[in-house]
Length: 130
Image (cartoon, rainbow, N blue to C red; front, side, top):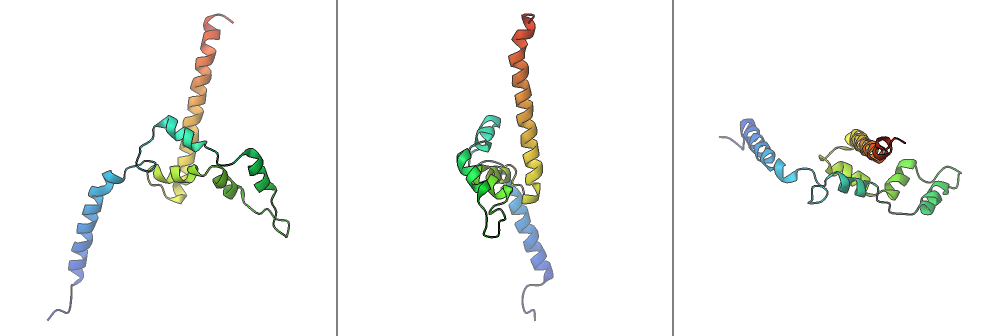
């Protein structure tokens, strides 16, 4: 007489739940909250500061009793730019170890945009022969 579910039952249950989870992936696609952001929205949130430069420098100057800095640069950065970690994690549900690669991709995108703007602003001068 069997005393409870066997190994095959649990394997089947696991595979069934896994299949349902795969079907839900579309509902959890990347986005900030419930809204999927385009490039300009991403850039605006990425660069939103939560404190002034003076407040940031005060954090850099703050020391522990033994003379060591009270905060690391990463801790200060996340206080100054609080949206960055959430953006990185919502952009594809990245894991913390993937945060650096997502950040680098964002930086490359912003650099490309700056280069395009510089090219457009320099174009009239070239056409006029200056």
